[in-house]
Amino acid sequence: MLSISFILTFAVCVQAQWKPAGDKLKTDWAEKIKPAEVLPEYPRPLLERPLWLNLNGEWEYAILDKGKVEPETFDGRILVPFPVESSLSGVQKTVTEKQELWYRRTFTLPSAWKGKHVKLNFGAVDWQADVFVNDILVGSHRGGYTPFSFDITPFLTSGRQKLAVRVWDPTDRGYQPLGKQRLNPEGIWYTAVTGIWQTVWLEPVHASHVTAIRSIPDIDSETVSVTVETSDPQSRDVIEVRILDGGVPVGSAKGLAGKTLRIPVKNPKLWTPESPTLYSMTVSVLRAGNVLDRVSSYTAMRKISTARDAAGIIRMQLNGRDHFHYGPLDQGWWPDGLYTAPTDEALAYDIVKTKELGFNMIRKHVKVEPARWYYHCDREGILVWQDMPSGDHGNHWEAHVYGGGSDRARTAESIENYCREWQEIMDLCISNPSVVIWVPFNEAWGQFDTEKIVARTKAYDPSRLVNPASGGNHRACGDILDLHNYPGPSMYLFDPQRVNVLGEYGGIGLPMEGHLWWDKRNWGYVQFKNRDEVTAEYVKYARELQQLVRRGFSAAVYTQTTDVEGEVNGLMTYDRKEVKVNEAAVRAANQAVISELGK
Image (cartoon, rainbow, N blue to C red; front, side):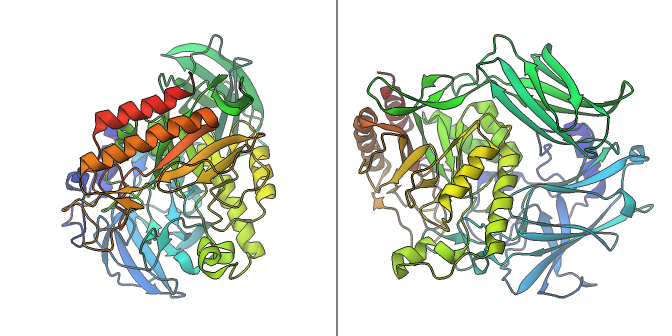
């Protein structure tokens, strides 16, 4: 499959004199980037087709005042899918709310695709994208973190096709979810991200084809519930789902699109961080016995729930057993690619290193990752808490801390946008077994209608737990009470009716010369001078945390995986070239915390 992708990619991408822009920090993976072969892996592992054409690579770009039409002459070349502000884009320019970013390229479809419908897919574009094919506006999408697609078949001509994308992103001057992005980054706020930041690709499909797969396991009944959506919901075409273990069929079912199929998986091999067993799955669209579309996917058998232990404390359970969640706060930022990891190897690296350090969980902090990141978590065996990216200044944290109240209320449009994008984020991750907890709010950053949002989240996905507001305004709803405390762990509230967790603590800082984003303005919650001092402080906190596990904590999140821009409180440097702790000592301390719950 990759060889096909490579051939098709090479055919449409012209080797040019691309190079990273600026002199900021770089990872080692930056040196491995080839403009004609950027992120060549198939980008959607839960719904994968064998034939596709990767449109990553060099495009033209232009930055214009908002409201202008497509220019005849563009400003230069940009390496997609790296955001325009990043070094790896080759541009590294800021785009304000008064401007729009234009992209343009051409492509030629393989002759073997003749007679097929052609889907144009975007992994993510921040924030508002208008897509033109051969100068026809074929569709628009709002939302900086979720995938979208268009059937562009009616707009194709013979020979070379023209593709243009217009992007508007107001960053922190707007109401949309944006996480840590700021036009003027400092402290805990980071460089803005604008435009295409995930893979763009084409694929040939039948007019009747699979558009979405939702798979939810039930280990108690030894079944997987699978709902398949297609391009024609009214079609009478038959959907067939088959689940396999190592190529051996274990269960199958047939039905119509949109109907939930219960597929047996007898004596299931359960997915855990220690043994992350995945079952492969094929989904076919059949008409009169003929296969119109067939995609590959996967699933896993696991259950996340809560139960009261012998001491009367509500605990989280994995597969019916008490399970302590312990992991780092993971921002998902890169010094050279910002939101976009330089390579797939880099994307997986932080996950692998997190497990090597003895953690079993990652809290993905106010950011959403490409689909392949969740695939790596599924495969490696790491629990994921998925945050909703924060946004809208209506109830923003800065207003509470510095102004004592909200500076403006959320509008109806802001609320509608939040709810739509949060549901799209859940759709993106709903079939990933690694994702076990939804976190709709963080520290009162844009927090609103908490009870309604939690109820909506629980109704949309009853199979997972909901952490209403990590460290935020605590409301009596959802499954979890989440405290934040810096630097050391502390339990200053306790809820006897919900799971109690320490959603953030730590922040032990160590600036390492040669690995800093800025020469000054670097900070951590507490700072030390060398690796041994940081390790000693980390182990001290871990031992304190062990005592709090006995008192009622069922999870903890350490700040943080890596340094990010001005923050130097990572377990690794921002460029991932140095681990800033003694790995063996931290692993032992982490394993001791996790095993405390089983004593």
